[in-house]
Length: 440
Image 1 (cartoon, one colour):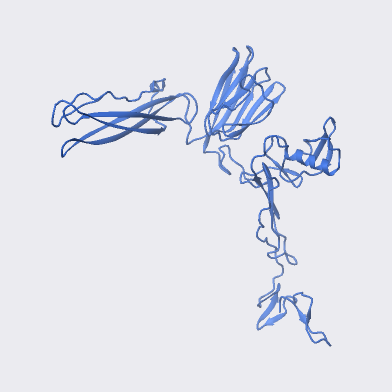
Image 2: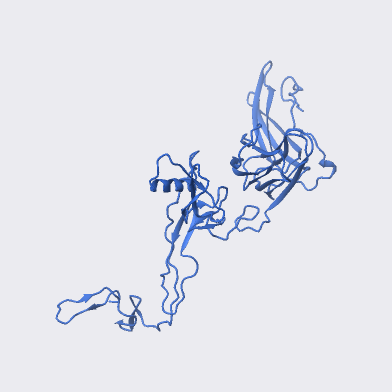
């Protein structure tokens, strides 16, 4: 009966209801009464009820079908709703997060430009009219559009669609008409931030900042300034002062910026598995990338004539893979090989040998360094008179560099890289029966 109050009106034969529940405190059974539409055991009715949130709804569809957009979810303050004298729910009832669709096809207009084009069609303008989006620094989340050939932009809408980037080279997004930062947890407006090492809400102690300066006074053409290692984050390259020279970059797959004597327009470029932002303001340039890099990234400068030219660069690398300038690292490996060869009828002859390889590698750049080598060994064993029997095997070994703390200063000088090789096997010391043979 607590779900709805039914009443019998005098003169009617059946009960009627307005579907409203009876008032809280209406008796509904032995030592029970109605409360919030349910029949419960009697207990003191609280003076007030604070509101609490319901569970979140499902995330909405992404605001874009390609590229970066936004989606939202909602919750209500009805679990329970605030009662007389109770407080409302705290924090937001709507939450937004970033969503990623497949990459937009090359040449696709930006999300902001698509909104200008959509408004142009809705306004029924001429088919040959073309409107372009214009960013306004004071109102980054308002939609300003300008017909081609017209200098003054027009305010088309006070708000761009949710998920529109605040600027052409910014990762912040507009939501509800406000430019909001994206937390490293993917939630728009979240306070979660990556530390300098790329760890969400980290303490910044799991990596090291590598800084360097490159100065040059003579020469023309391309000059390598630095090699940025795999796994680098927060890459920044800045010219010391405006100059007539240019910054340049390329990765191991030959993707590049300002290479082969071709100067690019400022913008975003995909190099080494990350997005590199290239900014040029007059004669001053800078490059930056969030990382992490997937391949080596080569930083270069293009000089056109003798001049005093300088740049500053920095990036972070994980302490787990950090190698320091001019530091010698030792590699040690050892293994054992046993061979069993049938020499005569019903007789087994065994060969056993083992050896150790030690390698020293001198590193000139901060980078993760690995060595891979392979080799082939061929063995010839005399089985019977005038008969040669051959055994062939090969294998590969991959080594990862680990730091040695016991390296002296004298050992830090450049050294050659040596690998073991094998000579051919010498003749057996007997003509028949069991004997021995050697190799070096």
